Amino acid sequence: MNSYVTGQWNNCGVTDVSGGLLQAGSLLLGNGGKDGKINISGGNVVADYLSINVGGGALMNIGTNGSFIAAASNLGNINYWINNNAIRAENGAAGWAINVDTASQAGKVVLTAVNVASVPEPSTFLTLGTGLVLLCATRSLRRKS
Image (cartoon, rainbow, N blue to C red):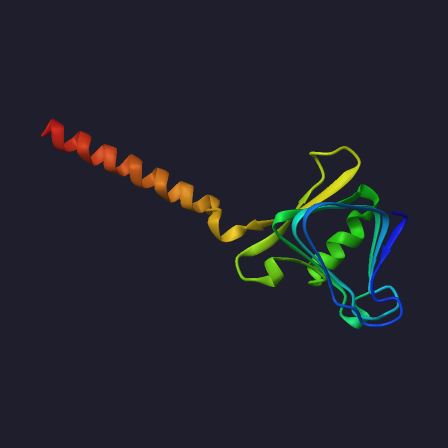
């Protein structure tokens, strides 16, 4: 498919990708300034070029089993759309974020949803390690006395 366009002439419903592959040269969301959303709840959407015109409410939502892959040249715009909530994970639910992967596929950027609430902060490991060291030291001192 050459281009997949939403919101060109009128507001449109949500394009829901729940499995398989949708591949297009260009993915144009809200192209005419109208509402045009895509929900990638599963499967992969691949496009060389991405454009999101947020003026009419267009956006991309990525669910836990979905991914979006684009040419790395889109990275600057993708980061802008993520920072301005035009690209969301799990409909913008708390504890979810978009993972931006530029390493796994050469020349590509891969977007997936990640649950950041389940990833412990690095300080959690430091606290756990300190606690274990103190516990071992206390037990060692008790054995000596």
